[in-house]
Amino acid sequence: MLVDLYKYLQTTLIRAKICLVLLGMFVFAQLVSAQPCTNYVFLQDFGRGPVAPLPASQIPYRYVTDGCPNDGQYTLADSVSGLCYTSSWHGLPQDHTLGDVRGNMLVVNAPYPSEFFRQTVPNLCSQATYEFSFWMVNLNIEFPPGTCGFLIPNDPNFTIVIETLDGQFLDSLNTGTITRTDSPLWREFSLKFSIPAQVEDTTSVVIKLLDKNFGGCGNDFVIDDFGVKQCTDCKYTGIYIPDVFTPNGDGINDELDVYYGNLVAFEFLIYNRWGNLVFYTTDPTKKWDGMYLNKLCPEGVYAWRLNYEAATATSEPKKFVKSGQVMLLY
Image 1 (cartoon, rainbow, N blue to C red):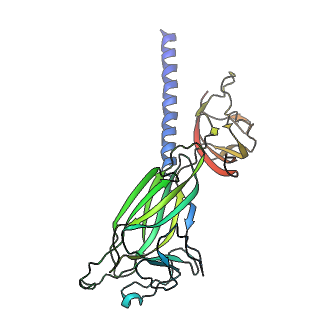
Image 2: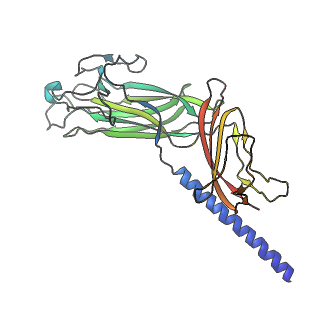
């Protein structure tokens, strides 16, 4: 009876330890998945100082140097005059980009419903999540009714469409009507999207902006800081790190190994739950045996981070960051 009770208590204790470790992994995973999208991987801020027209494949309207473009025209400028169209436009002394000296913005006078801007963003990781965003100002001042005479005042109403280069739809968003204001107001619009699994580990996307309204009285706006931020780590298919290892000396799964493909550079770091670095190597063949300061580490969840460069089939080596967690059990 005592032996059976001991075996029962021992089994229950092991199960409880595993449950607690799994709970810790779940909490850690939630913290990782909740990380903000902070780093730009692409940013179109339209440059500084004198600039050339954008490619015709990017915007269908006619480029002018006049600071008050007419219907079907656009310009790139570091400011907008408040005297445009008998002072019916907001004056903007500078663009949106923080600390941008003489930074430009895209000034558009849209004439009809159409796609008015597109941008190709290269080298995004397969199976990663990104956030696209841009800032805009409706240039038309909110006047009392009747300002447009017999014309119906029109305001921008954008649809964002994100596709792969071969036309595979990824996501879209409609901003709704972007109303006029008494004073100039920069507004941000954003959309998260994910890259599906691809044959290659990187891909490119096309971001399109479509305007649903007509020109005439209104539909005049500026756009700036058209960018993409990365929200989750790249899932490079040439890298695999196990979720569990057992450094108990039984010769089975005693070391944490990194299975890798075409690595060019490598940096592997492991942290305990207090954030202390317990393992570091730049040698892809070196494995962690669960030791720190010549002592076995306690059971639990350990966070890891992998910084590496990998060769791809179609381009130069690219930098990747991968992170996760591993369960250490005896």
